[in-house]
Image (tube, rainbow, N blue to C red; front, side, top):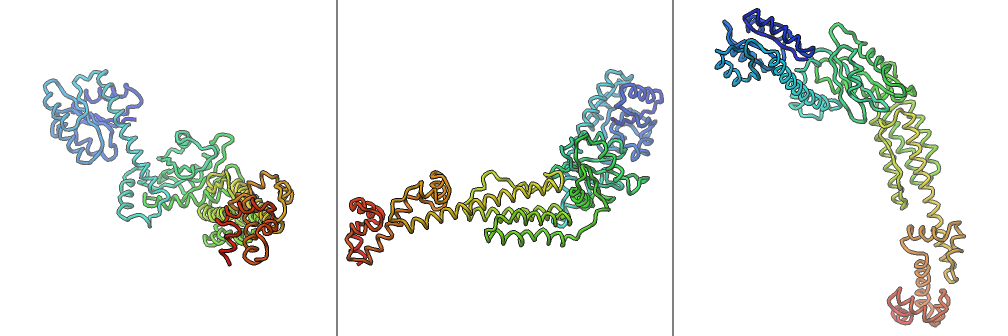
Length: 501
């Protein structure tokens, strides 16, 4: 709504203009008509209109002087001047001094409407820009740790925000997380029944902060009453967790208010109720206790990982989740513990040469509707990881079994199908697995084993002919043995024996 003040020393003109403005539409409101500029100035701080329509020529204080006085108060008020035909030079001066429009007497309704529409559009645009700037400043403070911010920057932001009506009195922060998310426009509409100045700011993790002013006539439980009303207004099928801060005054307390609301919301998140507003009834748990429990993940599960006891991981995880649910740690502690767990599991997989594939660890608590769904997701991730690790362990044993068999039977004709049957795998899968684990094929490994044994015989048993060495390591064809040996060592069997003597 555009708030307008009319100043003219002629009663007939100012009252008539006031009526025309009221007839122009409900979006225009006349906050007062004044016979002199001084009358308006005397009530300025109570009214602060968006637009002042003033006559140019008036006794004691003309329109130009009135404009100058108002501008000294550094306000964003717009001006339009009323002028007779003989006052054109005054009107032109007024335009140079910042008047947006001038209207000729008698005022034409069509011209008045055009002027009002132009000013209304301009004022709304500026208000939107200021709101965006203000929202950015509020977002900057929400969740900020004042101790990590330069003091001069913090003070500058607070000074700018404290000029806004929202921070002139008391306020509270309501922090909301819904599934699915609710558009800001709908929240503004639902909260309009609160009848108070409010602001809605989008925060990390899909949360929405509602800053609401509490009137002097209000009481400490106003925010809780508003929260209950809001939860009732949400569409069917919407789940919601809501946290409420204490009552504060001044923007410098915004970070504290946000932390309080966030802490309460995180406690409400542990509830299985579809819609829950956390509050003072939730037992507080010392941060150190929660932190110690969360860090115990490292102590409980890491030894199992290092010992290769992967099958025990899901059960241990289940026990830890039960303990965690009883203490309700904050999201930061929970997030850190899960990141630590993921890091240990990823490192174990890397060392085992296991590809995690498309496995995802969604470790952001706020992405889950509640603790139960988060715990299920985390447990599934651990079970999947344990399965991959256990499978990798079994596959590693299979490769070691094949390597040991080849070491014992290298003199024999080794068939891939027979080797695969030994470890209950298909030939193709065994070939792929062996290459992945060792970096070489089964055939290459078998050749390497035979040649190593041949080198030992050539060095230690000089009585054996070279063809006899070939026969003993599985190469009955002397020519083929010579070819393979030279390829592997760069020398023929005879050259090698002479070299190592």
